[in-house]
Amino acid sequence: MEDNAYTALVVGAGIAGIQSALDLADAGVRVVLVERGDCVGGNMARLDKTFPTLDCSSCTLTPRTSEVARHPHVRLLTRTDLVAADPVPEGHRVRLRVRPRYVDPDACVSCGRCAEACRLAGRVPRTFDLGLGRGSAVDLPFPQAVPSAYAVDPDRCLHLTRGRCGRDGPRCVAACEVGAIRLDERPREETLTVGAVVVATGYDPYRPDHPDTGRPELGYGQYPEVITNLQFERLASASGPTGGQLRIAGRVPHRVAILQCVGSRDRTTGASYCSRVCCMASAKHALLARERLPGARVTVLYMDLRCFGRGYEEFLERAQRAGAVFRRGNPSEVYRRGDDLVVRFEDTLLGEASELPADLVVLAAGLRPAAGTAAVARLLGIGRGPDGFLAPADPRDPAPAGPGGVFLAGACAGPVDVPDAVASGSAAAAAALGHLVASAGREAAG
Image (cartoon, rainbow, N blue to C red):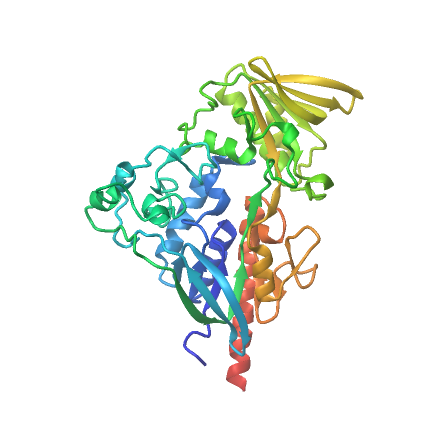
């Protein structure tokens, strides 16, 4: 048996991938955890609170991200993509491409001097904040990020895009007292053999401004007061661009409209399926808005309310008791009238058109398969459903997905909330561990 026969690869380091990696590592399996982004945590790291308890998202996530970073059986690779996978008797021989961070994570002490010195400081839209905040071409996504090391945006850095950063060279290099900046770093590839693969690539939020499947009539990208639900999370978060204050376009809103099913249950947007989490997320946003904006009028326009989880119906009632108004309505457009935004919609209970003035419009954007999902499916021989999400080999068993020990975890197989993502991660780890043990037994018997 090869020395690396018990190695497992986990693709994607959101909450589901982290849970899978930790469960496998705790069982003694050597795990390689790869993440395409700069840090682990996925979209959950962007959240302020989780429903239905309103627990701090970081309080749930941070202990896991810290543990997975220091676990002796886990090797973490960020800015890494799976580019090839070939079946072998031991499982899969995979090739990984590691894109440079341009900052040595082992040397970086996260002092932030490089970001302060950057010539573009305060001018670069922060990807982690979904464009709501501004940072530098070298940045740390958020204070609790793992790895706790800065990274250079190769599409923004003047030295990397133009070959020159001012007359005196890159200021970030001069500002870094520990010499962690590596602007000459190059991509590299690694090949390894793994006995099992857990795919946990997660989801991407629907883009209301998508050129093909967007909904331009809702004003997203045209009016700064129209944002998505995930952007609302960044406004509400203490680590967000406003320090947790619900303030948009320089003012505090007093009338908030939350529009449901934007990019879900709508064939014109390419998604006829329900994204599952949006109803409860909108109830959470309505409750947070009522608590943090005293006296604000908060209205949720919904198609149907699907409160599928334990305690979810009670959470919806809590939002209603707090003063949030839920109206069954189908929005048709958002437009500006003077200084106000106006949501025009059909009240589907009364059967008449109506208008709702607002200072802030939150679009409950649905969930889409993450970028690169189709490529991963093709490499590993995983099927996909008509919605584009990955499909298990047997619909009665959600974890096993492909030949040679490939398993699914989290939202890569369809929209899930945080508790279900954690459970899915553990289920995939258990299935992968069973596959590894069975494979070792067959090899020993042979």
